[in-house]
Length: 182
Image 1: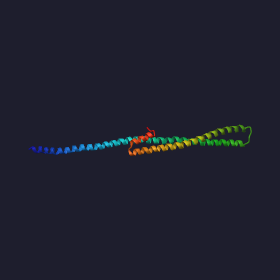
Image 2 (image 1 turned 90 degrees about the horizontal axis):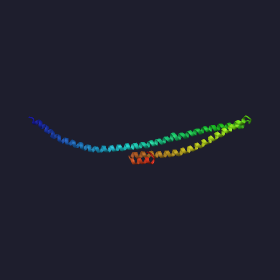
Image 3 (image 1 turned 45 degrees about the vertical axis):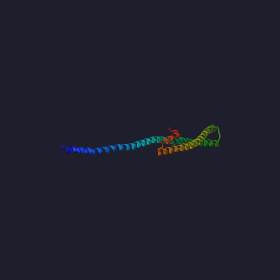
Image 4 (image 1 turned 45 degrees about the horizontal axis):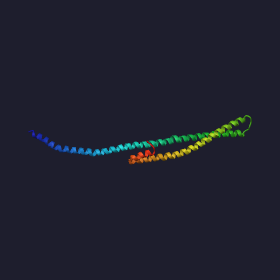
């Protein structure tokens, strides 16, 4: 009586075929359905990565320009102001020395000292006036440069973040081009 065994196998095969077919259909349907979603997700991730890299270029440029303003331009101006302050102290010291020699008793020994004091006073006066002109020029340049750099860099930062936020890669590229960033 082997037919029952064969019968079971036959029944199983008959039952299995529609189930296998359904699973095959489900697998094909699932792969096709999810493949589109995975492809779309991969495209989105690629675009986000590309936009992120472009945004990093814009942010690095922003940081570089602001660092230059803070660490070079402002530092240089402060150094010039410090030199001006020192030149003012030296100028005042030599002016005071000359005034004391001019108000003191004039004699043979004081005449060479007075001439030397006049020469030192004149030298330090010219240095002081030159430093004053340098400070005025650097402060004016700093103010103009600061306003330009901050306006331009904040515009770049704003436009780049906006373009990135809405996922507009072409606008992000245009922003970099407008600010001459490669």
